Image (cartoon, rainbow, N blue to C red; front, side, top):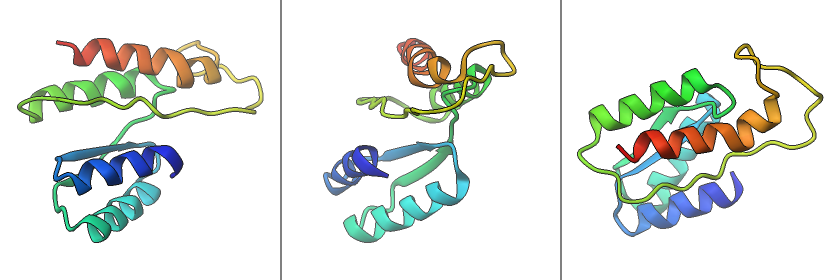
Length: 112
């Protein structure tokens, strides 16, 4: 939704192979359908990612590196606000993990 969906739509409109990294499978599938319909680009893909889980970030990065011949652009856009104080299963504060640590780890893993 929001800025992330707008950026993904514009990249797809420019005929880019576009991977939507979404936490929600349902919302992700809906976004893929909408972007494909709006742009005519069939190369819009969904991959599940929860930036609040470092295990999810590692799995996503490994799949991208394994499946994609190259990565030209990375847009880190996921974020949360207003959550109650929560510790993740990995022992991290949820908002900090989601908004910062996940993006930092993902970027560094994808640098190769």
